[in-house]
Length: 254
Length: 316
Image 1 (cartoon, rainbow over the protein chains, first blue to last red):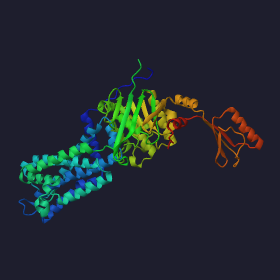
Image 2: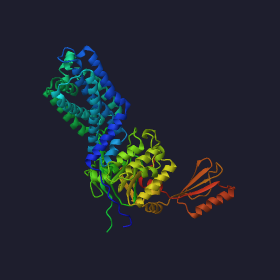
Image 3: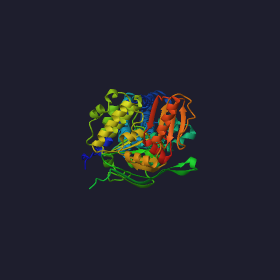
Image 4: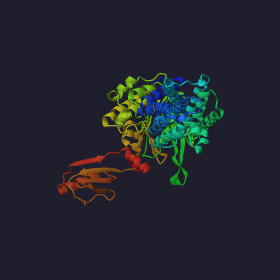
């Protein structure tokens, strides 16, 4: 045999690959200016507006106490659904998903890295929004803090799966349009920052079935009253499951 | 004992669809391709656009699921293999697969972090002349610069098998020389290199073994030398091109098997089974008419002749 023998290349460990991909995607998201407006500036504006305007009065808690859980839910939708969906849509267009899936990272590692990045950005958003809310007089129910964090993560998972489903099935321009439009519609009328009871009557019963209404409702129930909204959590679990199965079935890598 | 080939594709079949133009039926884009790629060799898949080359190697990379046939890459089935196999295989996609907002060096460092013992990013960057644009975002790079970054990304894991889909696409002549030289060097280090190309010149310059793919099938294969000699025996077809004054035709006395045409004013091509006596007939004609050709060229056999002979498809 004339060819020299070569050392066998080995992959980095699974944990390290996912961590590195998560870190890379987190930094990419944080460097994207439009993404930062959607992820941080608009939620902060919503927080200030809801604290200043009489939209949440007479609901048994202060304006900022009712507003903050919804704004945290809005942050999850911004990052997990719109931001992550658009980024994935364009990565798919440019063949980035295919290239990375040929490296040791693989398809599963790529998705895991994206989920990790969404959670990392969400932690930063939640910290900024919480600090701003505390300055506005927010006093969350201590018993509901851990529950609220869990609900927020569940919401992020539902919206990540929905974002991936859209990004993996339509053109990136359509993903951009759909995820932005849905963000506005859900943000205004989806029960995420405005509770269902403050929406027009014909929407009041519907939004509880939407991921936006379920997440907003469960966050308020946890952080305002320290209560578990079982129905909303079941709805979120249902959306996570359905969107994940649909994404596994229909997601196109190229 | 001979070393087992790095890649064995046996009777690969790939259907895609359903395709609207076929009334919702599946379209067979690869219909039984078989090939073998050895370590220390450059194996080329040569064919027109749409012949099924990319689909074939994407099945070998595990990016596409095959409909039928078998693929063994470094002893494993790429469709079910895990990270350990992917670490030993480098892939350069046709469209590069690089995120447009990334910068070359941080991107390469990120890809390197997926491996336990990657190549030195600095050395690769130096070798491929990426330093000059290391801080430019991918979207602002020229096609050739992107191609070099994509090649570096395919090599950073120190693979044993390297897939290159249209490696010279978009390369300026200098980059092309640089890339070709690197490919030969990697071959001498024992890598199995599998490349697709629609450029005969690439195959002729780089490949140890060529598979000509047409309409999803392997229509010819062999070393470049074998393919060329096969063509010269099976098809005694040569051409002679000369330039001189315009409007010389019709000409006298060339054998009826030969075809002489004025392809553009003052440029003439003789095609057919040319023999030494035909050259004498041509020069006798020129001497009688007082014609001195300004150029004279006997076309040598190229892979293009082989390609046209076996596939009948015009390369684009």
